[in-house]
Image (tube, rainbow, N blue to C red; front, side, top):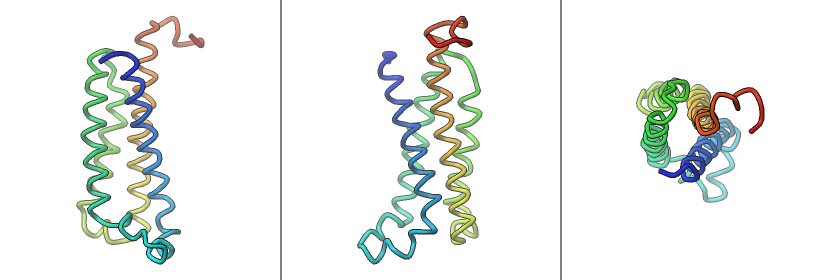
Length: 138
């Protein structure tokens, strides 16, 4: 994969994950409004499961590919707990059916996944520019 595609994928992953975290944080506030404006489908289990499945496949593939280049576990150390929290939030029924704890878990998981992509972007940047760029803007 070219450097340009790596940067694009990490930025896409970070943006999507952080938007997911914002969605999960605001969900308790919007839960009464969305059905009245015809957007109840966004609250469905199918959408949420599909998004977490996509985030899992996308995040693991992008970060695993980048790991081959920079050989640093920092980004994966953020991604894996984030994905675990997301999957527990979906699969563990008592958590999934309680509104506020579910929203908090999904927000935390989405934030960790987003931060993993940001971390990976920085690791790739340092790898391309070398260790001299770690302390100054290149």
